[in-house]
Length: 65
Image 1 (cartoon, one colour):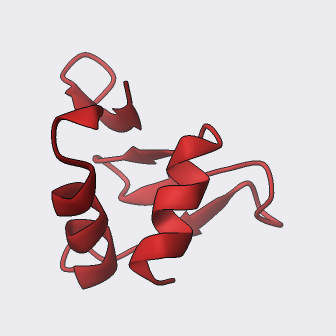
Image 2: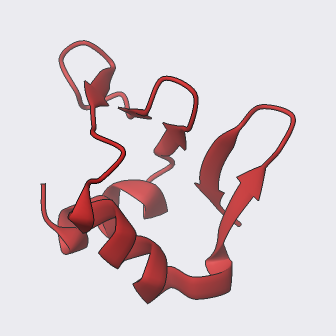
């Protein structure tokens, strides 16, 4: 997945679970897509979104604010 696709999915309500490193969105067949912790596309998306992407310590997820 590229940066623009990840940003679009985040804007549509997707989130990343930092424990399992799974990207959740209803459009995925299994409901999630496994990602690697070194996924450069997600890092690029997080840099592009800046402060809009928020990390929740309790649920350990990344979501758009």
